[in-house]
Length: 544
Image (cartoon, rainbow, N blue to C red; front, side):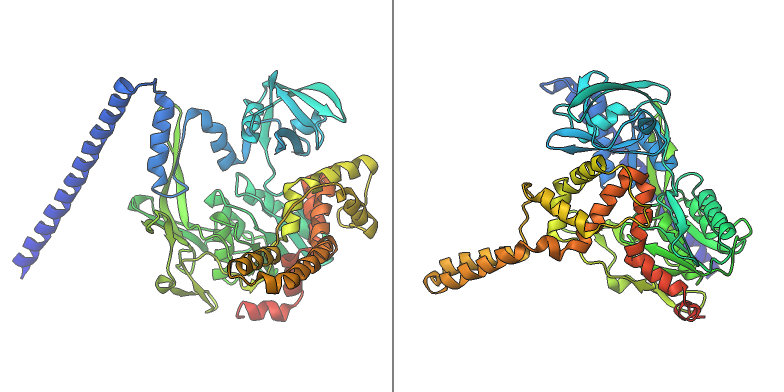
């Protein structure tokens, strides 16, 4: 028996070594083939071949067969890497947008070079460093304005029909990962986290400590991770640590290289182990956002509210490459305290069209939270309390895409020197009617589903020779519909008013004003306030 076992083990080792050798040979063979393809292109192709561009296309195509998070960055892309990892880049600190082939300043960030240089929302950018923006895309103009901190960039702008030049010294632009924190009422605090970039945990902790210090009656805290695509795993662990005791397992990573597998635990004393916590998530909350929300759910330390999260359970490392290039590689999957991995897309398997497939329901496994509640792997973080959000109306989408909110807000700002604070400012009937009047000579075509059905009915009736009998009824139906469509602005007043309010607030109070102004009508926030205000309901949800 022992001899048979020895022979079996030797056979397995031999097969493993042979498989490894076969794989090594395959790698060498295909590298040689690739090198020869490239050499033949360079030598024989009818036109000149740009070596850097051609190789970048080849690398990108190869990595595209893996997952969307495995990327190669040439030396020229390092600003993008810094933006992803640190939340910073060299530039002027302003959003821009393109409207009818013209480039406009959409929002200078508060206190950054563009803001300090006096750029205003709505300024048209005519040229960057003497080069006209005509025919340029939004991305091309944005790239031209970026550059090493300390260097200068000259913009030719147009404002109210007048042209002028502005010289701006580029800075190291670091966007605040906590753009707003405050109290939503006398007892509930709120912290918005946009990215898990460097110092995210420190900034969230400091915001929480300040809210507790300044509001002794605070009885609950809302952490808003909606739209947060993730970032640094260590920051996620340290944010969990704010409300979870020291040495608690938050996340475990497992990959091909066993020596790199790791368990990440909380490292410090918690700030508060008792205060009720609500975490807001939606379909754009991913990666580190899911580590925070998922681990707090697994540990029964917070109620999760909103919509199911994205489902990104993959971990990337940035690896140095020759010639100052870098590569971001998916190296492992992560598992939160219950043992589940929330990765929703299986990039290893593809459908007949080459698209990665979702993990099927049949392969999803049940896990238990600390209090025995059932949770599942394989499809993101499912909230404890799901809040329904109706889809945006086609009218609102049309108005937004035509920049009517943006342009009306410019008009409003010119006509009003000041407005009430973000929490007090409202779109009154007078303001809304002024917006309706503003739209009276503007175009914003949109086709509703009802309109499509009427058109389809007319087409089918003609094809099936029923039009002689139905024409009068269809014409009347269309007339009635068109009369009703005229009331769409009034019918969608609430939604349109919220978008209009955001567009106006940014002129007076920057982005943090938009966040504060939206809290009073935010369905997820209102639900969180309701849950955190009831100790019995909060404990019931967590299975206490």
